[in-house]
Amino acid sequence: MKPAFRDAFLSALVALGLFGTMIGLVTTTSPTGLTLRYRPEAVAIAVAVVFAGRLLFHLWHARHRPAPKAANAARIEMLRRGGKILAPALLVVAAILPLIAGRYYLDLGILVMTYVMLGWGLNIVVGLAGLLDLGYVAFYAVGAYTYSILSTTYGLGFWTCLPVAGLMACGFGVLLGFPVLRLRGDYLAIVTLAFGEIIRVVITNWVSLTGGPNGIAGIPRPTLFGLRFDMSGGPGTFAGFFGIEPNVTQRVAFLYYVIFALALLTNWVTLRLRRLPLGRAWEALREDEVACRSLGINVTNTKLTAFAIGAMFGGFAGAFFATRQAFVSPESFTFIESAIVLAIVVLGGLGSQLGVALAALIMIGGFEVFRDLQEYRMLVFGLALVLIMILRPRGLISGRTPSVALGTPKLIPTEQLPEAAA
Image 1 (cartoon, helix red, strand yellow):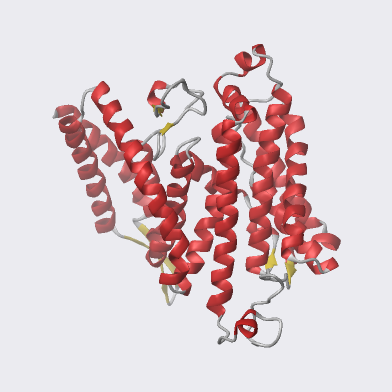
Image 2: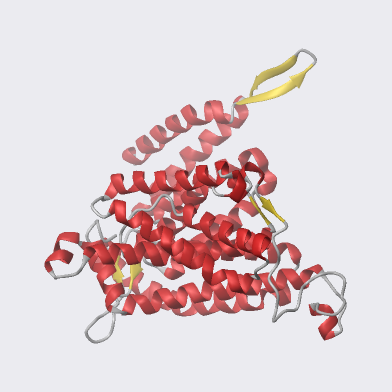
């Protein structure tokens, strides 16, 4: 018990240093101007919660820690059964959401599904190929601005511009891949971060093409076989064709199913690529680049294809973002977007499709749950991330099925994998 109390006491001291200013100091308005007011009771409550939580964690961990082999076997069986049940259940709920939910939950579902698609696209680069990318938002921006410029300047529709946006982002992925062929780890992260910032600076300052800080407005919405979703209800509209009352929810539900289909396409392509020689080359590159070269695998092409395919799905998501918002500006493509998508991939579990979907649901949906808390929103969100990394350091789904296996494939917990693989 003594080590548990000592650790809890040290955690409380750290919490006191952090929360003493974050929670304790608050600005208030008075006739003389802004004044600082200290709230010792709020700090005491936060420190007490940290102390009690850390102590309870130690007590629970000491009583419920199973033997390593039993823990691995139980975890494997739990993940196997949970995946077979949870994945179809999430798919069914996502498919029928527009039929059972209102406008607010549809908008939230579109937002979550967009980040699921971005997470699955980045998972190709980070989870399968093992290449750290901090500039993924650049491909998101390229796809959004490609569709925005083509639709507003040349009058092209969404379905015509969607593959063009993906190919344009794919080309930028190859452009990023060439300078980083010999880089790894921190150096690769710095270069990809710089690439994302370069793209943001370009779209901010190229006013004649991108509109600069003002962005591009009036981006047309997608149509269903030429039928528009507007409130007129006249000829050529969805409501007029089917003879129903026009409603804004019809357009929102259509946008939901569009991003739902794009996300399923991303998942389907990713799962198929993992079983191809290209996907096995990505996994070999992730495990050991030197061994990958010794096997005769072209590391250059392997890295370029990972960047290109991951960027293509980012471009698709960017085109959808532009048509959904009907407006794009550089403020939508900052570094924090790349950080959120990367956090989704890491917290979900590198290489795990189901884990990425769960992480996106928790992170993006969690933001909305705590929206009313205002000043405590980011604090609760940060504490939740810390707890996840303490309890599940390898991610929510910390195991994966090998792409190729002799006999019955077995789920491998990442604790048994090398550090580079995990």
